[in-house]
Amino acid sequence: MRVAIIGGTGVLDPGLLKDICEHVISTPYGDAAVKTGTYGEEEVAFIARHGWTHSIPPHKVNYRANISALKQIGVTRIIATSAVGSLNPDMKPGDCVVLDQFIDFTKARASTFFDGGDGGVVHTDFTEPYCKEIRACLIKAGQDLGIPTHVRGTYVATEGPRFETAAEIRMFRLLGGDVVGMTNVPECVLAREAGICYAAVAVVTNFAAGISSRPLSHQEVVEVMHENSERLRKIIARTIETLPARPGCDCPGIAQEATATPQEATAARSREA
Ligand code: HPA
Image (cartoon, rainbow, N blue to C red; front, top):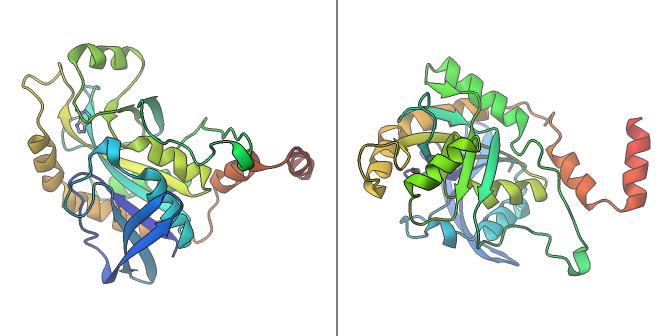
C-alpha cells in the first residue's frame, strides 16, 4: 500500500477504487475507519475525514488516529482534498488550488505525535509543508485535464466549526492568506511527522465571509463540492498514475532529521557534504 486519499467534505466515496474492503484500524490514538481497494495496479487506501456519514466536525476529527493508521498499513503518500473559502479574487468557486503554504489559526487540537516524554523534544522543519513531488503531479494533472488549477495557495486553517467573521477574513488577507478551511492543519503536520508525503488539492466552494455578498452555509459548500467531484476524481486518478515509483522528495528525510540523535544528525550531514 503506497498511496492514500483523504477525502474531505463532499468526497465521501473512493469512487475510482475497485475491490473495496473496509477496515477499522486500532492505533495508540484510537480507531480509524479505512477503506482499501485497487486503482489499476495500485493498492490505494481511502479515509473519509468527516466519517462515512459526514458526522465528524473539523475540530473532532481524530487526525492522529487517521495518520497513524495509514502509517501502519504502509502508506507513503497522501493526496488530500479540502473544501475552502476564497480570500483571493483570482481564486473563484469551482477552481482547484494546489496548496503550497499554510498559516495555522487552530486552537484546541492534538496537533503532534511528539508530546515529549520518552520520545524527547522534536521540532520538525515546515519551511515547505506540502510534498513538492505530489504537488507537481497534481498541478500537471489539473492543467492536462483543462481544469482551472492554481499552482500555489496559502491555506489559513481555522478552528471552526463556525465560519469566520468578516474582520477575521480581512486580517487573513492582510497576512497573505489565499483560502480558508478547517482541516488541513494538523493533518498535513502529522503526515510530515510520520514521514509520509502529503499534498492537498483544495476546491474553492465560496468567497469567504464579508467577500461573499450572502451569508455562508454548509449546504452551499456541499453543493459546490458535489458539482466538482468528477473533476476531483479525475485529478486524483491522473496524479496516482503519474507519481514516480520512488519518491524523489525530501519529506521522509525531513522527518528522520527531526528525530535523529545529535550523533546521527552529524553523521548524516557529513555524508551529504
Ligand atoms: N471558511 C472555512 N472553511 C470553509 C469555507 C469557509 O469559507 N468554505 C469551505 N470550507
